[in-house]
Image (cartoon, rainbow, N blue to C red; front, side, top):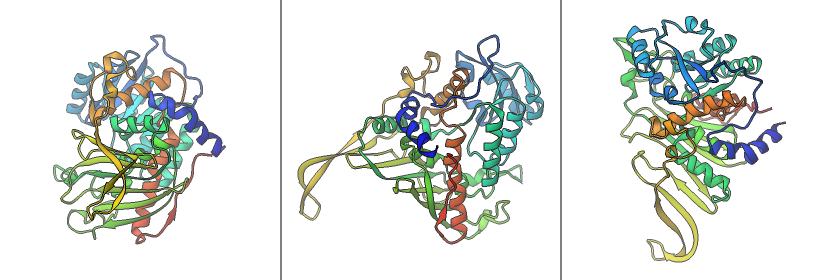
Length: 402
């Protein structure tokens, strides 16, 4: 079962993925008489940055936030006239077919399970959950519900990742023998407190937010991360004191081994003289690709060549071809409905996430970033943080694909 699913991902799912489509059928979904998905948006910050109102097969039925000002913002953004002050009330609306949960990360498991039990399809912000146990509970709820679950991972749909996925499908990398990814967000501690009270972000372990990195390999090659050794930097000083996660680290670096025995290095950094980055590197036998540090820069492509050159010490060697590469604007192609062919948040990913979730429901199939992908993106980071707390011990990562 494990090998069959992975082979299917590689042979057909990745092709579908490059088009913004998933590969696995879900249990039957009954469409409403309008032929549109009626969605509820929950969370007035991140939730207000998507394009459900632009999708030709979607209607924003209702919105929700605990704060009136954010509910008003959601209503204005999506031209929606119905709002609820709580998720519980929104879930009681029989006209809502699906929900987008843009709620705090520690609530994702509870909110997802409640939404599935209420009979709603679920799109949820990252990560899947905060603990391995919660991740497993969400998996069981998804499988029991017969409803679609999708995690809204932006790195999967960045323009550079879409390009890398296409190159991989075409065999241009050859074997990708190693990869690396980093998510640098220095200064994030300004969001740790609001009006003097700690928020859910206070002291969040960096590796509990790994998906912007792990997706950069998993969504391209379909690999799974099987072992990890992780090292953290920090000793619980300053604003880290008394955080609810008992996390002593500002930054964490993890060294993963994949099920194909490839190395994959991941860094998630909250503090330091760092440039903001959400980037990956794929190193192949025939071609390598390096995402830019900033979204506005050009990528670097390296192609194996047989021409001779000299290194900086004057020694002759076979020199590879190194050139700048400008990614296509995939958001301006057939991959999206015409009303959505514009740039959007997180390097153009928000329109793709919107379209994939709605399409997966209407086409009665699993979403591309389904529960299995969400587990593969999220759980390795949770285990990596456990490794860091143990001083870098090599730990085994659970496999959920069977």
